Amino acid sequence: MNLLSEFCASFGQMINLQKSFVKFSLNTPPDYRDYLALSLRLQSKPSIGTYLGLPNDLGQSKVSDFKILIDKVASRLFAFASLRLSAAAKLVIINSVLVVSFNHILSVLKIPSFISSYLDSMLASFWWRSSGFRKGMALRSASLLHLPKRLGGLGLRSIGCFNSALLAGTGWRMMLNPQLLVYRLMVSKYPFHFALPATRITRPSWGCRGLQLAMSVVAKGVRWKTGCGSSVRITTDEWAPGVLVSFKDGLSESELPTHVSSIIDPRSNVWDSSRVHRLFDGLIGLPILPKWKIFAWKVVHSTLPVASALSVRGLSVDPVCCFCRHEPETVAHLFRDCDFVSLLWGGSSLGFHRPSLHRLPFLHWFSTMVSLFGATKDWVGLINFFSILWSIWLSRNNVRFRQLDVSPTEVLSLASQWCARGQQAQNFCLKSSSLPLRPRPSVTAFSTCCYGDPLSGLDICLLCDGSWSSDNSTGAGWIFRDCVSPLVLNGGARASLSSSALHSELQAYFWGLHSAYSRGYRRILIYLDYETLCLILGRRQRSDVSLCWLIQDIQALLSLFEAYRI
Image 1 (cartoon, rainbow, N blue to C red):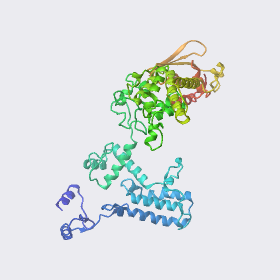
Image 2 (image 1 turned 120 degrees about the vertical axis):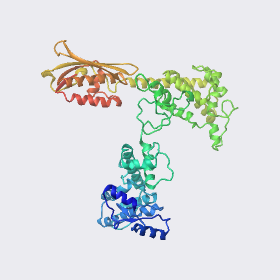
Image 3 (image 1 turned 45 degrees about the vertical axis):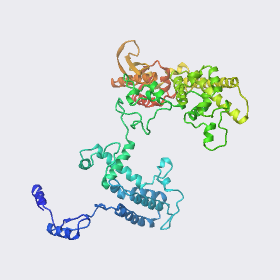
Image 4 (image 1 turned 90 degrees about the vertical axis):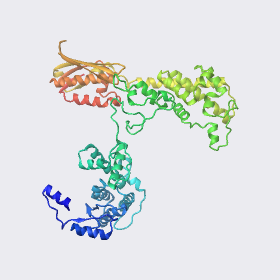
């Protein structure tokens, strides 16, 4: 009481003892409770009461404390049951009326899984119910109803997931606003509560458990802003959207970098593309036949049905190599270590000799060979490599399943046929990728991009050009010239970074247009020396998706001019 009197004297307020009460712990003896309540001249109550429909003092049984939500929803469902609502109306009522009625509870406290599951069952039963108080028949599981509409569901609120989402929002707001009183209280009691990734806290309160769940949800969704990458670990931190980054198979530990900064060019601050391809590019991106890509994937991941693997799985097959008839048929033995196969590698155009074949483990050797061909862009050597592997596999199947006899000469002849097919397919792909998506138009289309009435007179002539270097550095320049004379009026230049020559040309074009508009020119004649750029702006050729936003900005800027001609 002395403490309360000191508080009243300090703040100039009085406590109404008639409206106040005291609550004791359950471990306090009853006679001692009565004595303390009489001494304090306050009445004793077993519970603090409720706030916004929820008990303030939660007991050990959280299910019994949160059953009030079940009663609340059940009473509202009883009121809606007689309205003969359509399925669409019920969906709106569930998401916008019933669930919203206890949003304030879901956003601060974790609902026990039993309560959330029971509420989901009640709401789904209400939606399936045909009319009145008749029990409906659920023709599909509730998980389909809870799927978002874009994924084929109905978007029905799942109480447990919705509870986690609201708690995550609360935790995130507290992290972004450390000046809040609730944040300071939580951090003072649980110092590592808002650490990412979420840390385990011993003996937390129920409210802290809910926020701890929120931080675990937030930790799954947050990503690094990479920056220079010196503090971001490649395989441990979640810096790439939606996935933990991992290196491709077959690389040695010594050549694996640890931080993102090691795969960024320090001079240009862009990705070191050659190293990125060497570390992360898989087999699917190689310019080889699609069946070879799947075949290589099976080799790397040990899913090729060789005899030893089938024998281990209980199939009655002969596990001995069908070529040498001495060793078990494993992937390494079949494609490299067999004496018969060693003759093939030695007699091929690649000229592998037996000591060099066995210097590395098979998977490491296989990945190193593929990476070496890819890094040097030796596509002919890559096709030769895969044609021999594929011919060995085909010959093995002929011997094992068709009882045919094969010689090294026949296998090499088969490999040369597949090599020719691979080179033919590769030449077709390279030729197709280098051609425009539509037939190349005549040069007359080079000057047909017009808007407004350029024949009635133009204010200025704009000439712009961009340059690009292999280190991704870019230079852009533009000048303004009189339309009827070679007199140069003014101009500008700018340095930047870009991913390609087309990107640099687009940047120069955008900056030149922006400069022309800011100087007050509204009717312009534009000269370009890059025909592909004209075709893209004239919507006669598609562009790379990475440039579509810059092209949209250019087209939006062009729409501001009264007239232009390219």
